[in-house]
Image 1 (cartoon, rainbow, N blue to C red):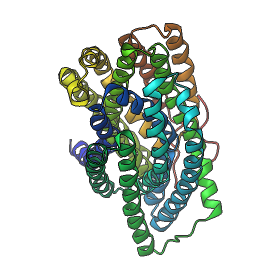
Image 2 (cartoon, helix red, strand yellow; image 1 turned 30 degrees about the vertical axis):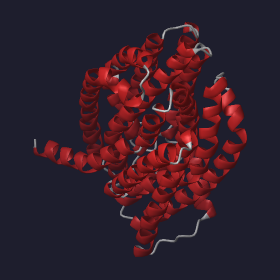
Image 3 (tube, rainbow, N blue to C red; image 1 turned 180 degrees about the horizontal axis):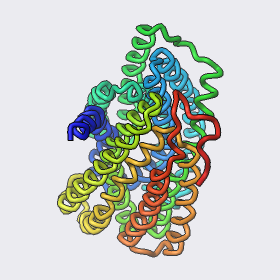
Length: 451
């Protein structure tokens, strides 16, 4: 019992601040949705389309946080804090380089990206306006991801929490002022988010610089280190790409059957709100996964497979029960959430059954997120990449066979049963084996293979 209580305290020490920070992160989109939603359904639908593109662009780069957390934690477990910070510096420079490329390409391709969703009229115009400006915040946001990963690997989840809370409060204030006070509409919401993201990046870089100087770690980028961070991130990019492809494909099926009339806008807007809330709860469940990444990497770096197994079992139970709680909360709140984001009664009516469907799959999602975090912390990226491809190959045909005329509730039922359910299966099977338990300050090359 004493070991279990020590394990729980360790999980709580990392997970509670991570939980609060992760709740704050999706408030960028929730805040924009709440402010923009009261401008009109077309504005909300436009921001919804743009949000899918932004989440995909940034989501593909989540390896900047996840891969860095695992690598830094392993170095910390092996007793090399200077090396851990140097690894983090290289990851941050990689974030700057990727952010610059994504910003330039994103702004240039904005009309084409919005056009992929087959939306027209005001919805298309609002999506283009919001997306073109929001891409300017990509580089700061990627820097936030990278430095947050460094701090998590160092077992510090409090600092990202403070920065996330202050940044999101600033984002909300800026949105209200620029959207309603100045009257800039959806463009004002995008500008507010970019300014807040830039301030967050500056604050976190300052923390990283102080830590590096305190431990005599270099601040200049190492070409070999940056290249190594990029290579390590490739499997995680593939893994994330498969996840985002599933989200985008779901949005495409919803939008392609929506049409250009009021009912079509209602369908898109409802899906946007439901997916935003699902993402919000996913970040909540991911709090234990963040602890899993940091604790798994540290235990493996210290050469302790027994502790790794105990942590995995305990955190999986945490994930399951966290999903039960979030599912019950979502179901209970489903009739109340619609009016928070829009005054359209048609959206209110459609949103409730969609959220009830999503609530059913929260416990499974809790297990999925924790085991994903364990394997990321172990550096098992190659397996996660191949597993992601298998899940996508299982999900896409079922979703596309439903066709664009399928009801929104049915789409969400397939999303939960096939996409989340299959992810759970492949992760549980992997966690029961031993091939991911690679000890030392870095996973051995080629040790983690495909399923």
